[in-house]
Amino acid sequence: MAPQLRYVLLSPSPMAQARPHLLRRAVAWPATTCTLPTPKGLHRTINPLRSVACSSDVTNPPRRKGSMADVPKDLMDCITDLEKLFTVDKQRINELCDEFVKEFEKGLTEEGSSIPQLPTWVLGFPNGEEKGTYLALDMGGTNLRVCEITLMGHGKFDILQSKYRMDPSVKTSTAEELFGYIADCLKQFVHDHHEGVVKEELHLGFTFSYPCDQHAIDHGILQRWTKGFDVKGVEGVDVVPLFEAALKEKGVPIKLTALINDTTGALIASNYAHPDTKMGVIFGTGCNAAYMEVAENIPKVAKHNLPPDTPMAINCEWGAAFSDRPDVLPRTKYDVIIDKESPRPGQQAFEKMIAGLYLGEVFRLALLDLHQQGHIFLGQSVAKLQTSYTIDTEILSLIELDPFENLRETIDVLETKLGIQCNEQEAKLVRRLAELIGTRSARLSACGVAAIAKKAGLTKCKVGADGSVFNLYPHFKARGAEALRDIFGDAGDDIDIVHAEDGSGVGAALIAALTLERVKAAGLSRECMLRKGVSHAAVS
Ligand code: BGC
Image 1 (spheres, rainbow, N blue to C red):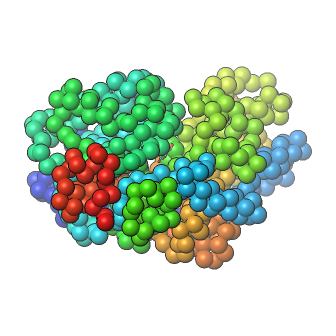
Image 2 (tube, rainbow, N blue to C red):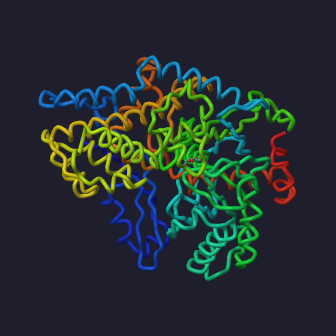
Image 3 (cartoon, protein in one colour):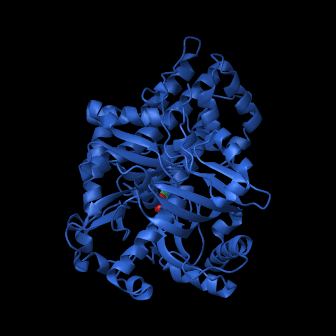
């Protein structure tokens, strides 16, 4: 049974009142976020305040080994080898979790670790009463989203948003091209929704979901590109001046107030709606997590003399975990190839094993290897299988969802998407491989969540999770929940991973609001407060 979703709709904004069909369509929309296109490309989003999963799928992953009686010995041996390669058993997941905790702790010190643990200068949770209108800009991998968000207090909000397609070539362009394109989109948004004029008090939160060193909330030096991006002239550089120069050149009258990561956004937006949310995680094209520390536990910010109990959101950047420690995080030969052939070899080892960008590629490499060793698809042309990144994670999802004992859908998917004819026995191997890759991803992801819970002493909380793998990959939640029980026993169920609120939109707006409140409370001008790197001044 599919999880059931319960929606609490906001009272309609003036715009929706003028167009009641927008609300009617929103009620019928079966997604967790209802984004409704209008003729002008304008979107109205209804806040699904709470999604409640009722399906047993969320707690117990299915065991779908099926009958393997007709599978010949050679293929069975292949399956056994794949099981050995990809299984993260209870003992290993516990060992890995403990190593994670150590790395999280080291990452907070000057000494550093493979997990960067980046202070974000988001200094506390919202109180749920934040109000006002803010802009949010979300630079995702495929789209650019500009939102105007009205925070209405009581954990409620209203969004007006437009999406702009990002051409894949932008991913490998130059700083000028990337930020010029972003500025063009913002200009278009201002033109469409404000007739080109922005009131001075409209502040922008920019969700830039790549590892950035931040000395203040409105700046960030990009450590390295991830998720296949390779834009020249940005690594090692503060991205905010690049962005602002592009805005100036294009005459876009907007000021950046906060630069945030999508995980920090998910943490803050989910906590706004559900105050028992203590972690924000993204399991999508990339993967990562954020949680709240206190200053006294972060030796690397000691020089700022913050009061010891000052809360500080930490952007873990756990995708980088154990990149230099194959002994702790054993990789298969397929993971090693993916790393070598990526634009940034030697980086993001954990992410390359579990994130959506890579799952199809792990699958492709394993199938190709078995074909080349003469085990499957004998005598066939496997041209598509020979091309990198031809298999999307969606194909693994379809295979895992195949409801038929004779695996008819799996056989069809292989034929239509890859031009491969496969028999029922080969299909059994193919399905088992998809299960193994999907299960490894879910268990390793949950291991990261468990390690943050251990590190931060969280025994009962919600974790706001977002991203295509979390939202769409079959059994991901149930497999993660099982891994949490492998680590914490029954208490694992108290770490409840639920769908996050819109972190990159609402979270960015909230963080802009919280920042401006601090500026006001300190009686400082915005420029003095932020740009001079004294963003912490208002907390003392
Ligand atoms: C980035 C993180 C981001 C994550 C999810 C990773 O590749 O390094 O900053 O949070 O993807 O989008």
